[in-house]
Image 1 (cartoon, rainbow, N blue to C red):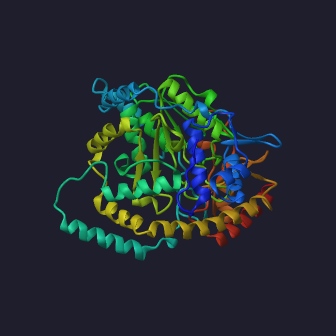
Image 2: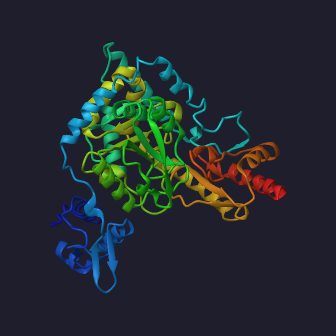
Image 3: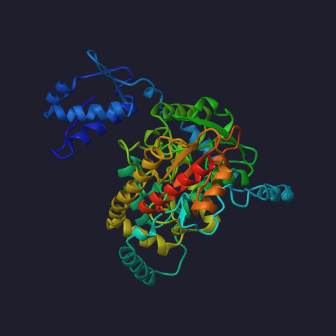
Length: 493
C-alpha cells in the first residue's frame, strides 16, 4: 500500500493512521512482512525515530508482531474483521425495527405488567443511603471542579437562541450543532468515523439503550450481555420482554465462545468492563465482530467513561473496527459533566438510524433543546476539552492514592483488578472476607461507604469484592477513608 505524507506536522500520527487503516481494511494482509523501520523512513523521507514510534505503537496495540532477526509482520486474525458484505442485512434489520416499534402486547396486559413488576426497584444498583462522610459510590462526578462560569455563559447563549426561535417541535435526532460537536469529539477521541447526521441525541445513555432495545429486540428474543454486567442495561432489555443471558468474562473481556447463537443483540463495555475494569483485547474484539456478522446480531458498545485513561495509549472503540454496520456506539456526558445533565448519544449502524429516530420521536419527541444548545456551545468553544484536561489530573491523583493503599496496607485483604481507565477501581476480597458484613462494619465503625460487586452477577459463583468510585471523593478523603478501612479490617481479623 502507498503512504502519503502531507506537510511536516504530526508525521507519526499520519503514518500510524494510514498503516492501521490498511491493516483493518485488508490492504495489508495477515502475515504480510512490512519494510524495516530504516527502509520505510528512507522511502517516506522521515527520521527512523518516527517509524520506530509508529511500529512500537502498532505492536503494542496488537496490529503488528515483531520477530527479532526476521522482521515485522501484520498480526493474524485481523483479516477476519467482517466487511460490508451482506447489504441485505440492512433491509432485514429495518423490517425488524419496524416490527419492534410496537412494543405493547395488547393481547396480554397482565403478562406485560408482570414483566415490569419483576424489574427490581433499584435495578440491582447500590441503595444510596444518606451520604457518609467518606463514600465510594460509583458513577459520581466532582461538580466542584466543573467550570460553572463557562457553563453559565453557554446557558445564557442558549436562552438567547431560544428567545429568537419559533415555538415548535424540533428534530428527534437532536440539534445539529450538538450532533456536530459530538461527531467531531468521537472521531478525534474514539476514532468513530461518522457525520453529524449519524448521531442521535438521547436523555442519557439509558434512553439510548432503551431505544435500541425497542427497535432491535422483540419479546422473547435473547439479549446477551457480560456477567457481571451493568444492571440498568439488563433491566431495560428484560422490561421489553427479552430473555437476558449472562456471558462470562475473563482477563480479556467477554468470552465470545460462550455467546448464545440465537441472540438478537449483544451488550458490551469493551473499553472498561463494568464493573471489573479490564479492557477487551483486540483479538476478542475481532472475534466478536466476526461472530456478530455470522449470526446477524447488533452489538451495543457502551463507552461510558472512556475519556479517562491513566495507563498506556487509549484503546480505540470497537466501533472504529466496524466495517460491516454491526455496532451501535453509545456515549454519555454523565461521567464527564454530571449525571443530572441527562444528555447521551448513540451512533448506530446506518440501517437503524431512521427507525431509532422514529422511536425517539414516539417516546419523547426530542431532548431538551435549551440543554442541547448550551452543551453544543460548550463543546464547540473548547470549554469541554479544557474541562476534561483539568479533571483528568484530579482523577489521576485520586486513582494513584487509591492504588497506593490497595497495593500497600490493604494488600493483605484486597486484590485490585487491573484497570487503566475510568473513574472506579474494583478489588476482590481475599479468602475469609465477605462483602455484606464488611460494608456494614465500615459504615458503622468508620463512616466509610463501600459497595459490593456480587449484585452485578446473574450466575454463580458470585465473586466477593468492592467497587471504589473515586469521582466524587478527593485524594485527601480517599487517604483518610482507606486508613479507617484498614483499621476496620484489622479489627475484623
